[in-house]
Image 1 (spheres, one colour):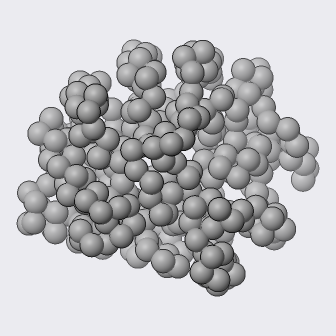
Image 2 (tube, rainbow, N blue to C red):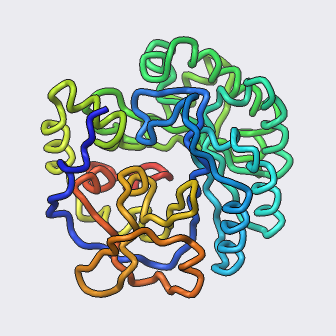
Length: 325
């Protein structure tokens, strides 16, 4: 795999600082039952990195001490971590809003068939990967047969009330194919709802459009095809200053499977530690574990930036909650 780190270091992206911490986004490991082309995590069935019970306990302690309101669980397939169910249950007992970033097909895997009912019982928000409502486009990105399994996963979630009961939020995620920015989120959501309802009688709440980041597997593909510079030019030429105030790194802290802190999930995948020093222009050179941040007030601290940050501010903007504008 071709690394994009050195191509992204030099940047003229504006400096940004943290606001009040609201969300802890935790990567439970890189193990996944799928291996998608656009995956910025480079997750797959052979990955061994997985969060331990000890680190899960550290996460719960951090949530308590920092009064975190939202726990956003990602992977890989977060459900494949043996500690997933315990973590979700304990977080819900603390009145924390839990988000599960689900690839849908894991709900059908042997040993995970009870996951959908567990999520519904604990009123976990499900954010599900669904890069298109057309079978050929989904299978091209995620592998042959994935679309059919995804539809079955969505039907299962609908069966338990997701996308129908207002307390069971089901949101879908769209990723573009190729070197394109996402289209208008509102219009695409309308199309998704119409097509999925008419074709498969599937209901959901919102559609999130997310820009593909020029890192890991997608970044390597861009380099291999000679499209990296062209894609970066697209991101930079589409930069909108208005998006800066809403980027997710201002209110979210990303935690890797070992418990180390990053300003966002993308920085985590680049190994770029959180820029937690509040001194002008400074960025910490070494990783900090969440246990080391229990006494730190993160508000006002610098956010570590590189050229890939243009991906979050291009066009209508992009975050784990979809478009910013």
